[in-house]
Each structure stands twice: as C-alpha cells, then as structure tokens.
Image (cartoon, rainbow, N blue to C red):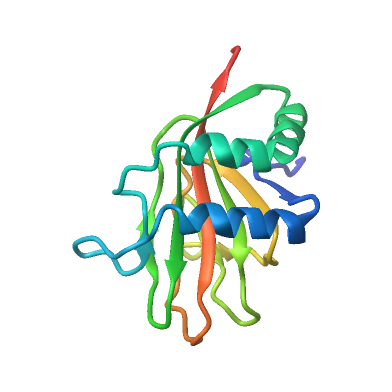
Length: 176
C-alpha cells in the first residue's frame, strides 16, 4: 500500500518588501478610511463604509508583492474588494469565509508580540477522532498570507492593550 494525500488546500505566504517604508504608507492610507464597529461585529473595520481609492492606492503600494504572488500561482489576479480591520483588547473575529471561488489575502500591518493569529479551519473533520482541525498560522508583522476564499478562518480575542491591525482583500483569478 502506498500512502498519500487525497486533497490539499493551497496557501501562500510572502513578506512585504521594504515593509517599514510601506507600513507608513499603508497606515496613512488606512487613516483616510476610518474603522468603526458595525452592528454585532466584535472588531473595528471600514468594510461597510465607502472606500473610493483604497484599492488603487493599496495596489500602488503593494504592487511588487501582488506581482510576486501572480507569478508564483501563474495566474493574473484582480482585487475585487479590500478593507482594514483593527482588533482592540477583547476584539475577535468569528469563523467565516469569503466565498467559493478566488483567493483572499491578509497583510499583518500591526502585529504586537503575543497578539492572536489567524486560525484556519480544515473543511473536514479528523478521520480518526472526528474532531475539528484548525491551524494557528504563525505570522509576523509585514507578512502576507493568501488562501482560497472558501477556507474558514477566525481569530481569538485580543488579550493585549496594543491594537492588532490587518488589511484584507479578496481576489479573482483572471485569464483562465
């Protein structure tokens, strides 16, 4: 018998090049699109607010990284939506996904030491224990993580007084 894997889920991680310079630009960009809590949300975001120009400005700042990703997956990408999220003390994000087709990215803009990381849920239970499997992906500030939109993910409550901030975006694959 030859063991193997029946399914795999792709994932890519890459650094933000010249992160210290780009971090300042991205923080200035985020300041132009303030975050707030909406309804029952347990975090601050600007996703429900108009963000004209946010996508283009992000693309101008992080174009190198987007090109690196496109080259790695050998497909052209188009950002369809982009927003920022801040997690103050006690804030968290419940399990969710971003749809069925395409990719979603997270850039860890401010990641204080000890802040909760994004945890990814395996779409099927463990075959031996029938338990849910989740993976807390270790990340550092400036890291970009990209997964298929269908991958459910969440973050536990931030126990720190320092704010954790991310920029997240959804992408479509083009030139199929």
